[in-house]
Structure formats: C-alpha cells, structure tokens
Length: 381
Image (cartoon, rainbow, N blue to C red; front, side, top):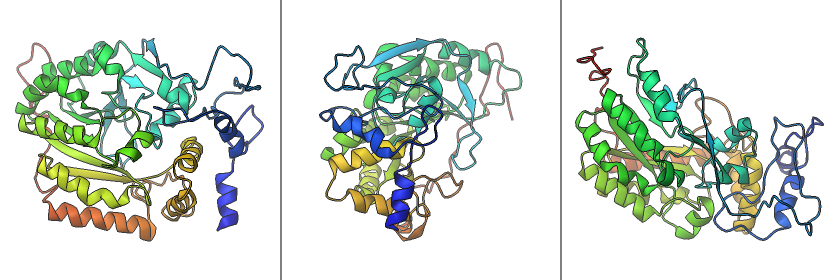
C-alpha cells in the first residue's frame, strides 16, 4: 500500500510537454513562503493545457507577480453562452449557469478548480484570485429562454462556482439572472455557501409563490477553526443556519448540502449538521464524499500536511480506501459517495439521520407549467 501511495500521489502535473513532474516540485514553492491567510490554496499548480508557464526562480527576486499577493482581480468577459447542458448522469441536474468562473471562497477541495485551467489559469491561487465575471450573462439568459424549443427544464445556479461569492456584491449578476427567470417563470435551483443570498429574498419569495425556485446551503462543519482554513472566505455555519431560517420562513423551499464529508476531519458532524438544519426549516438534504481529481489532489495534499500534520497521512489513506486505492475518482455512480467501509459508514449515517429528522420525505418538484415568454399567456407541458 505504501508503495502504491508513493506511485499514485507523487505523480506529476503535466508541464512543458515532458510528461509528469513530481508533486514535491509543485509544493516546494509553497514551502518557501509563509502561509497565506485567507486563501485555501498556497501555490499555483501547473496548467495541463499550457506548454510554458511563469515560475519564480529566486525567492529573493523582486517580481511583478507574487503568489502571496492577496488581491483579487475581477476579469470582465463577454462570453458566448451562459446555460450549459450537463451530461453527467449522477449530478441530478440537466442544465446549469454560472455567472462567475473561479471562486474567491477558496474551498481547498473544490472540483471546479480544474475548470479554471480551460481559461488559461492555474487551479491553485489563480482560481481564488482571478475571477472571470461574465458581464453579459443576463442578456444571454434572456436570449436563451426566448428560443422556441426551450421547454423550461430546471436550471442550476452554481453548478460549478458559487453564484453568491464576493464578486456578487459588486456585479449583482445573480440577482439579474433571477429577475430574468422570475419574468419568464423559469424554474431554478440554487446552491451557495454565502449569506449574500439574503439580499435577494424579495425575488426568491416571489419565485417561491410560483414554485419555481428551490435553494440549498452548503454546510461542511461547525468547527470554525476547520472552516477558516478549509473554505476561508465562506460564511460561518451559524450564519448559514440563519439563511435557512430566514428564507424558509419566507416560503422558499430550503435544503442543505453536506459536503464534502472528509474522513478524520468532519465526517463525525453529519448528525449535528442535519439536526440544526432541520430545526431551522430545511426539508431536504444531499451529501458528497471527498474526491480529489486533477490538480486538486496536489493542492489538498499540501493543505492537509500544513494544517493537520498530526493526521494528514491517516486522512489521505482513508480517502484512498474509499476510492479504490486512489484519491481521484471519475466513476459515475461511485465518485460522489465513494465505496468501501469508510464511505459506507458515512452513507449509513446519512440514511439513519435523514430518517430520524424526517428529511427528504416530501413529494416536491419545480413547476415547469407556468413558464411563459413575454407576450405569451403561458405554456403547458
């Protein structure tokens, strides 16, 4: 097992077309600098799509770019589309839209980090610091919904990065998208870790009356020390419960996403999270088990050993045991919840406490029958 660990986990990220580079090469840059407070990643992983990359050769040099710089850049872009077809059969959604690419929340485990490489950036610090702002998103959504063949399938907001991340405070693209959906009676699901969603309670309440919106809040841990380093720019669990309480009281159907569950870090908190969410008005739940695909495994390995050196190796091995001996898992049907005894215990907790607290018992679905385009009375399916 130890030999397999070394082979799997010390592989390289592609660079300059010459195969794989040792994981230690990627982590060494982070070791030469002090811990960057307020960020999940501590360095930039190599981008597998780029043949060349800029690196810092001398620690004492004065460079125009600094990995440790905490400033976030908002990069405004005119994109070609905003609604994406989701082909993965185990994600529970058919379409998604994301007004922002990259996410300042900085969750170290986030699978969306790998997508940032398609934009030409790193899945590491770049993902948290270089935020793509799709400024024409509301215009594109309106155009999309006007298509005669569109049949009002539900669209997920934050299928990738969080639509209520800090950039929303400046750009308000999520609010604009919700207003378009409300005008068309387009059903929408929302997933967020940020309390900024409360700023849109007025729109959400209108949509809830028509049964065209449902929202989930992601709660990973009540341990503030853990949250601060694992998802540094998200809101506290206490504030997330306030979000659930306030929106459910306003008539919005609210649920919780518990995840990822990480053995040895937060997997023991599932009952507490579920009960607290239920007490504040949540009626449905979902969970995921940690998986570390692509560049995320390098970032998580570095983060784990820096923040939890006393249990890092044990946690890593438990993740491996839950994904067929690897930490990265792309198998549909298994990747979200894992397999084996450790993942099985988490799944059993989920079933047991879901039943105990009466979660997921209602028959409910987003209403597609009220969809209408401007000038139409309505559309029935």
